[in-house]
Length: 319
Image 1 (tube, helix red, strand yellow):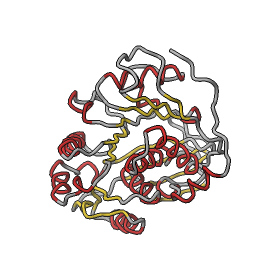
Image 2 (cartoon, one colour):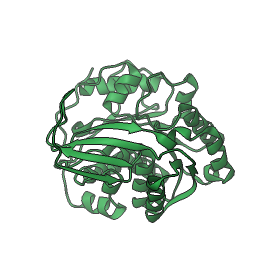
Image 3 (cartoon, rainbow, N blue to C red):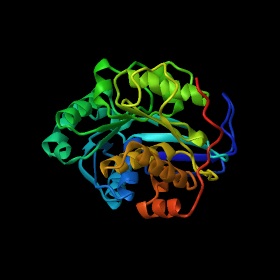
Image 4 (cartoon, one colour):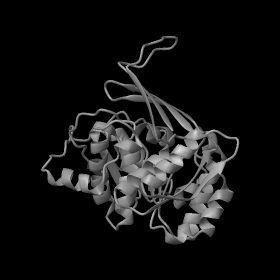
């Protein structure tokens, strides 16, 4: 559940500010991504946990209303539903604190239960993020590998410890934002050239494809087929951002990941799916909320057919 306070600017340490408004809305990265994928036309089954509290009941009802399958979303007795405390500035920028709650109880046994319900036999793509225990993520990767299902991994929030070495070859597409890419690769990403170098460094770890989202600069897409040398600065492709006025950026990354996974599940190439994802995310940032801001497939298609020009903010620098 997202608890959102809107303010002119975020407070400094020790400072108290008056907010402009407050609202709560369905949230959590997994739920946001599931809702976004369902709105974009994908058949979605979610694996997760909610608490035995009003927020948990509300989230289950909300997921079902969005046509997200909840056979593998279980209620954890005596544990609160996970929440995100969000400070949303007038500029659209945000600061988020996640309290995992029931999410922290999602276990490898829950993943095995989902497998017993044939979810991995049925899936075309598995989308996973890191608001759940890393041991559970490892179980997802193992089941997906066993069933030959591609995995799109969104490494958010970025872990304090390095990924286990076995993970890299099990990830089909890694989708970090630029700060997550910097943390995972050890390469500064404050320039387009840095983003490219970070992507190549991550590719060299064994992941097959990398998409680094970089806000208004777009997204950098790189596949293992393009280069075996992480030091190279050629190859790859920048997907420019669409020029929109952001209202709320909280759901942009989740919508992008969901749209990318939806496109891949439909058989699109990585570049084509990334362009579709960029359009979906552009629409999402013009609306308040996280999951609530996700567009429908019809809205994305209309947006793409409206003749909008992609915004390339300067030629990405080599380096």
